[in-house]
Amino acid sequence: MSLSDAHNPDTARLAPGRAASLAGRVRAHPLVRAAALRLPALIPALIFLPMVLAPPLNHDVAAVLEFSQRWLAGEHLYSDLIDVNPPLIFVLNLLPAWIADITGLDGVLAVQLCVLAWGAVSFALSLRVRDRAAESDTNRAFLDVLPLLFLLCAGYDFGQREHLMAVSALPYLLCAARRSTGAAPRGRIGAALFAAIGFALKPYFLGIPLLVELAVIAGRSRGPGGLAGGVTRSLRDPVPWVLAAVWVAYVASIPVLFPDFFGVVVPLVWDFYLDRGLSVGELLLVPRMATILCLLVPLLWWSFRRSALPAPVLPRILGLAAIGGVMSVIVQHKGWTYHILPVQLFTLGLAGTLLADWLDRQALARTAAGAYRMAGILTAGVAFFFIATGEAPWREIDYDKTQVAGLTDMLNEAAAGERVLVFSPGIYPIYPALNYAGVRATLRTMNMWMLQGAYQTCTPGAPRYRETWEMGRPEFFVYRTVAEDFARAPPAAVVVDRQPGIPWCGSEFDFIEYFKRHPLFAEVWSHYELTAEWDRYRLYTRKD
Image 1 (cartoon, one colour):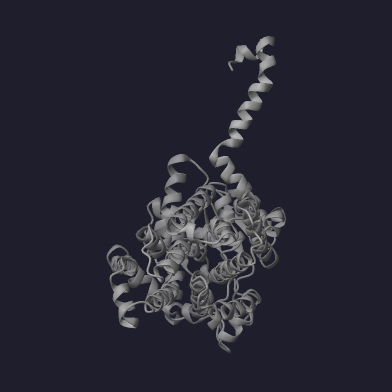
Image 2 (cartoon, rainbow, N blue to C red; image 1 turned 90 degrees about the vertical axis):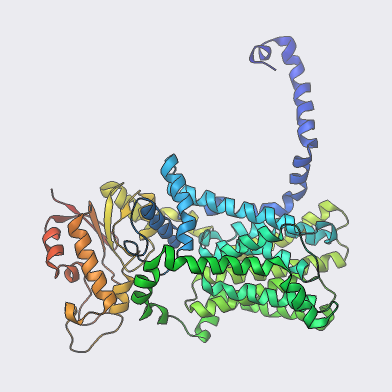
């Protein structure tokens, strides 16, 4: 109907009928019917969508994005930009950095859209590798929405390396369950490539595919030829070879494309960064870890008990992935929330598939719509678990009262869009405040972790700060480069955290007093003055 028809009384009288007809056709469209059918299962996952898009962006995700933006702008990774992470995560973040650069789109929004696209790839591959016709009704409905749960239920840890790994691992795990029964699923090469990238983000993740591939061999060993036949069939399978090829190519490329990673970064961090952390006992008692282990252990018993041998293989594959996730947490020995996230996702996926299988054996879902309602109860349980044990949506609801919001306001008022030198022991809340204010950091590291490592203990009777000839290589590197960079290209502002994160040793560690001992720093610093103060942060700007 044209605009002129809308003002014609005769035509207008026909509009309600036409509108009703159009509405009927829309409701009858296959895609609309499919979406309506799945809506009960989708809603619990979709309630997390506004949470993961709302501020604040995860601090590590923000920091990695800012490093990739600086890399794209011309700084050199691992010489101008020092970080312990291998290069793959920075390479992946070049895409949102490039999108933001050419479109003018906010970098935070660009990285969020890229993570959503990562999830879309996982959803498409998950759908392709499954045999939906062979799945029971509720299990099929639950698996339809499982990629969305993996993508969105991460909450504040949305976009973290562990989150990206778990999302990319899901199609591979679904594929492995079928491969262990002798099937050759469609899309297995794509699933292997996608998973290989995710597992390559950190070497600690490789325990997951190792356990899964052993399970695939064990499953195939039930066929002709026993164990030898299972090994032979796995050697003919392209999936493990694709995984290995990606990892070998990646590791081989690092010394060629990023020689400073092994030449500069590894020697700097080897002495103290890798040794700082919790014991195994302390890790297992971290509240989030202890909570998910209390759920994982009985689920593993349920999955692997002898009477469960005829049961679907997928729960066992997810259980092994969860065990691999626990191994990753232990090896990293930090116990941070995002380290535990894959254990939570794999464990809750395991719980959902077991319960869905049990519901189907009870024949409670008599129709497809009933199966999706049952799956909706399961996905709601997953969603409530993450709400009860995580930080979303409470961190997002309370954003205006957070340190990120306050620091962002201070930076917006005094240094929006400028270059800023930041002295702080933590990544949060510096990131994502710098990202939200459009500020570009000048420090070669994300924070002052090298000084924290150098001064983590007190030496009785020693001066508060070491002389240059007493410094180890990491400390001298920070002392020299900060002063030289500051003098060569003075930033518009300097942010100083009054809580240095360094033990009290007769007096408080003062970042400015420490670096003022360098003549280059002292000369340039004389041109700065205190212009703003908020909470524990002070902001200095140039006088001229």
